[in-house]
Amino acid sequence: MSKATETVLEIDLKALEHNYRYLKSKLKPSTKFMGVVKAFGYGSDAVEISKKLVQLKVDYLAVAYVKEGVALREAGIEVPILVLHPQAVNFDVLLKCHLEPSLYSPKILKAFLQLVKEQHIKAYPIHLKFNTGLNRLGFLEQDVDDIVQHLKNNESVKVVSVFSHMAASEDAKEAPFTTAQIALFDKISNDIVERLGCKPLKHILNTSGILNFPEAQYDMVRSGIGLYGFGNNAKIDLELRPVATLKTIISQLHKIAPHESVGYNRDFKATGYSITATLPIGHADGIRRQYGNNKISVLVGGKKAPIIGNVCMDMIMIDVTGLDCNEGDEVIIFGNDPTAEEFAYAGNTISYELLTGISQRVKRKYINA
Image 1 (spheres, rainbow, N blue to C red):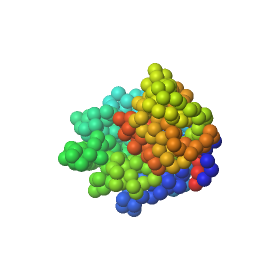
Image 2 (cartoon, rainbow, N blue to C red):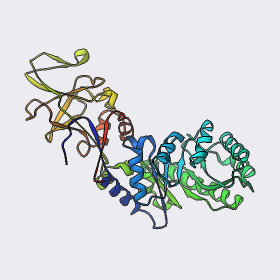
Image 3 (spheres, helix red, strand yellow):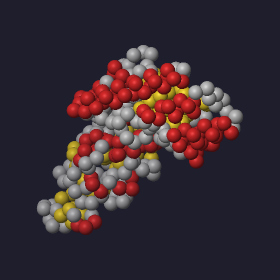
Image 4 (cartoon, rainbow, N blue to C red):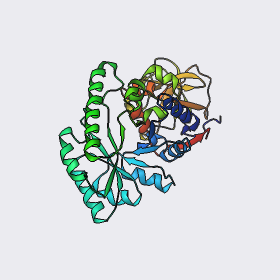
């Protein structure tokens, strides 16, 4: 594996394949798999991740917004793509690119039905999203009558899936709540299927749901963070492989005398003679200010070096006192050690936020394709 010569996010497609196959091993052979590639593929590269998942025979892809789906279509990706949070203003583009909308409220349902009717479209695939406790997006159970009224014998659309989203499937203490969510979804989805006389796919499980509630896999499951190497559980994380490794290099070394300061606001002051290294990465690249001031260490030649002082927009400084290193040497920000989960924890956040926050100005490099 070549060493970094600049700041780069290394994307291991073999690790993605491993994670996909591990999650699939938890499912019945008949259960379909939806790969979630929103937010630039959780901060990596949605197009390359999607191409690999298509190669692995994924059944569906999911994005948050229409623009994300358009980018996949323009890259030649033809598998079904669910748009989880479409806006009515983008429905024309959605139709043009044959993206499939999640319809989650009476207003958004009526707007979409009006458009497909005006365009004389037949049997356009739609997905019905129900709120069973997350209280973010979704129809409520009491909306079923209205939904049936609008969709019964409506030839403009075809309900291809009915789904919901879990609120706390990773938390064992919340198991009763999750079980109640599943029960409510079961009731609602069965009611919809019976009253519309259709046979849509049902899905409610996310990554943690796949691992903790496999009995509720229905016809399809969705995985986002699990594909990228994290299962919201330390034991599961050992079975998965991080897809993204953030690397950079040492731009310059400095000899610091006792009581000299480093960085803005002089937040680091040396207690003795020290050697510091400046790295070409900062909060504009996704390494936020909360990671400064000895909150977390990075790896230099396999040895830990703490981030010192305040993180700058384009640079961070680390303490390499006693380490054998030179300008131009590679530095691992996160990957296998520390993992993105460990790094994020030091900043009082989660791997999702850290990964999706890596700036698009950071070069992406693909390995093990």
